[in-house]
Each structure stands twice: as structure tokens, then as C-alpha cells.
Length: 150
Image 1 (cartoon, one colour):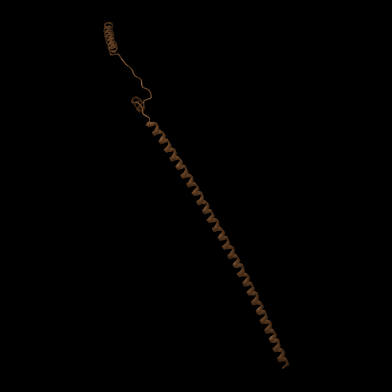
Image 2 (tube, helix red, strand yellow):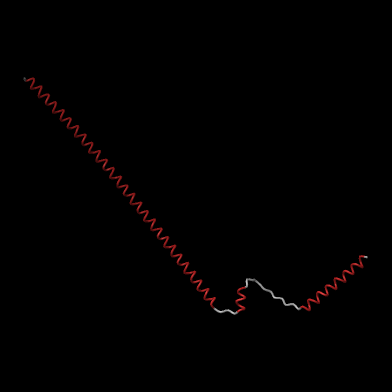
């Protein structure tokens, strides 16, 4: 009986030790699982934070791009307005100068596109005299040549 009792106590002690080892192994496994879960959560948090930073940078870049486009559009509009105002001023000044009355000869002079005009006045009597002298001289030369050729 004493052997049975000692064997039973030994068996009970072995069972308790096995149970304690089993519980310690389960605790270690639970601690490792918890540590892995914490690491995974921290990694996911880092990824979410990085994604949020990237999204914020993208939003800022888009806002900067839009602001630059708005500034360029405003500058283009200002330049176009200035150009239109200059054109309007030029038209007003040219119409003011046109409104001054000009004489008929000045209007005709402005309408012409010639660079230089030369006017020549001839006396028809003198022209007739020069032509008749040329004809007589030609007749005289022809008769002289015919006599020389014979």
C-alpha cells in the first residue's frame, strides 16, 4: 500500500509537472502569438501612416499645380486685357487723326502708292520738228549709201 501510495504520489507529481510544463508551453506560445500580433499591428499602423503621408503630399502637389495654373491663367488674362486696351487706344488715335478734314489733293496724294512721280510737259511743235529732221536725215543717208554702193 505504501508502494501504491508512493507510486500514486509520484504519478500525481508527474501529472502536475506535465500539466505545469503544458501550461508553461501554452503561456509561452500565447506570449509569442501576442508579440507577433503586436508587431503585425505596428507594421500595419506604419503602412497606414506612410499611405496617409503620401496622400497628403499628393494633395499638396495637386493644390500647388492648380495654384500655378490659376496664376498663369490670371497673367494670360491680364496680358490679353492689356493688349486689347492698347489696340483700342491705337484705333481711337487713328480714327481721331482720320477725322481731321483733308483737302481733295491731300486725299488723292494719300491714296496713291507710288514712290516717285515725274511729270513731263512737251511741246508738240518741237516734237514734230525733231521727227521730220530725223526722216530727212534718214532719206539722205540711204541715198548716199546707194550711190556709194554702185
